[in-house]
Image 1 (cartoon, rainbow, N blue to C red):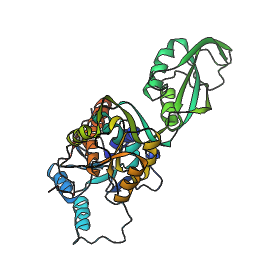
Image 2: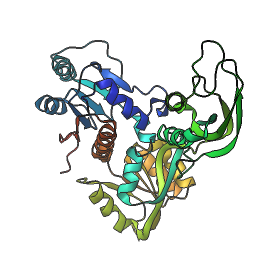
Image 3: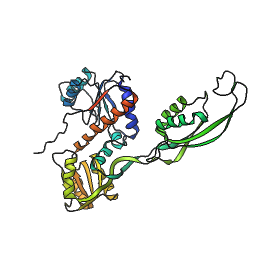
Image 4: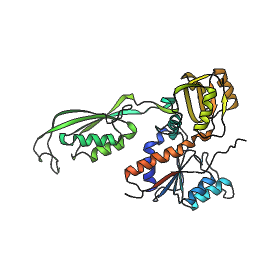
Length: 372
C-alpha cells in the first residue's frame, strides 16, 4: 500500500479515458499545477469555479479532475483581481493541480455518455456519432508450456484478448521450440553451445494498438526467457467504433409527455425544454451530453424517437421539428453525472493498484441557471 503521486493517479485515469479519444484541439490534460507531489485527496468535478476551488482547499485536495477545462481558451494575461485570475491564484497558492478530461471522457467506455444512457435504463445502447476506431494488432509469443497459463493471464490483465463483450480471448498451439544459447547467456533452459529442444506453447491474442507498450511490458515481465521470441501483426479488422452520444431502446414504450418528466427526475433538473408532439410514441432514445446541435440529423438517421441533449439552440429546435424529431433540452448540467461515476471508477482502480488515496465527487453546485 502506498500514497500515490499525481502522475500515478492520472496514469490509471488515462487507461479509462485516454487522451487519443479527444476531439482535435480539445484542451485536455494537466492545465494548472504539477503532478509529481504525493496526493492524499482527489476531487472530481464537472466545472472548476471558485466555489469548487474553495471546497478543494477546505478538504486538503491536491488534485482536481474536471470534465470541463477551466482554461478552454488560451490566456493572454492573469489578473488576480478578476474572478478567473483569483481562482487560478488560489489553486497555485494551495498547490492544487487541475487535470481536464473533456471529449475523451465523453467517448470513453463508462464515460459521460454511457453514464447518461445507463441512468435512463437504455437497452443495448450503441454509439450515436462514431469518432474513433482503433487499429488492432495481434501478438504471437512462444513460451515454455509450464509458463503458458501465467503468461496468458498477465496479457489479459494488461488489456489483451478483449473481443466485443468477451475477455481473456487467446489461442494456443503446442509444439517444439529450438535454440542454441550463445556465449555470455544465462538460459532458462539448456546450456551454452548446445542445441536445446523445448516443449513450448504458441500463444496468440489481439490488443488495441494504443496498449502495445503495456502489453509488451507485461509479456516481458512474465516470461522466463532472456530473449523472448514474439511477433506483432497489424490487422485489417478494426475495434468497434467509439464516439459521442448513445442510442438505445427503453425497456417499455411510452409517450413524449410521459417520458419528459422522467428525464427531468432521473437527472435531477429543475426544468427541461421539450420540442415535438407530446403524444408521440417513444421507444428509441438518443442522448448526448453537452452541445448536441450538430447531431440532430445523426439521431434522426438512426431512428431515434427523441433526442436528449444538454444545449439545443432555438433554430436547431425548428430544424428538429421539420425533421419530425422530438427533442428534450435537459440542460448542460446533466453531465454532473460524471462526478460520481468517475470517482467510483477511479477509487476502484486505485484500490486494486494498492494506492491509499481518498477520491470523492465535488458537492458544489456549478449550474449557472436557476428556474423561476
